[in-house]
Image (cartoon, rainbow, N blue to C red; front, side, top):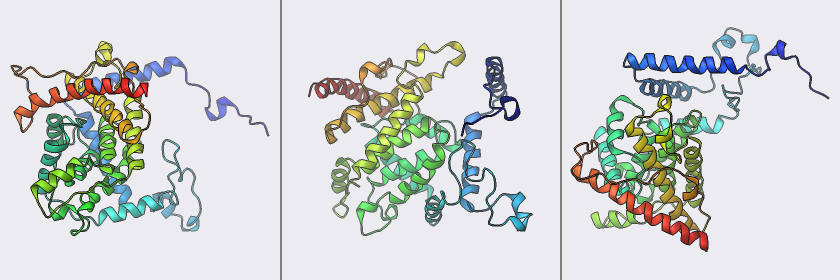
Length: 357
């Protein structure tokens, strides 16, 4: 049967370009007004996302309020209830497993601030030097206000991988099994990822990159834990397929957001803050390096090639530069960019070798 419709009746016609441009200008104007009034847009969005997540996990099966006023409609299908605002399936049957996961997450005991600080410090001490997906200064500055460079998803990913370097029993699902360290945070991150992907941001890319490493934790974590304690022997989770999938998602989002392009080429109207330009470059090269390490480890092809990017290499910070990022260890603020630059250039050489095999 041939589908016929009238564009005037149901509004399926294409919007005129003039209206699209007018809306774009209107959005830019509103963003400037918010900026003039010192309103942190990203912090407000993060707060709304958190509130929305809390309301959804509290009782995902509650029908719309309008239906509760009509008992005769109980058990019936209501229009658009199975789809969210993006047209994705989001009905009760689809969310059954997600709801089960949310209920499991709600049983997780609250983590003390002291333990959070401990695990965050472990992450930036042992994981950050070779996998520089997160800017420590920006993360710590944004954490108290839920700012642009912080999200609950990113926090749980950091806590999960920090737990792999900790010998504390409260990080384990089973105190007698060191391999369960960080599992409670990873399960929480997987639930949060479902909601975060509906409106991905730069922290989503960071979280996916870290989650990939959680599933295939480097053996170095085992050596570090053993060196610190004879009682704890860390083990890798060993889920290569899950790690490969999460890393691939991080790469796709990075390319979709243009992290492979030089931010300096953007026009003045789309100019980014200097700290975000540096962060985008840092994330791109971190993913580039792990892509080469994944290729060497699994024998799979490289998915990020140097010829596909125009972003410059991460450059070391001069030691006499007074504008050192806010970090707990000032020495690390100077040393880490040097390590990042060295690893990036080494992986460029590694790419040439892998492409010749």
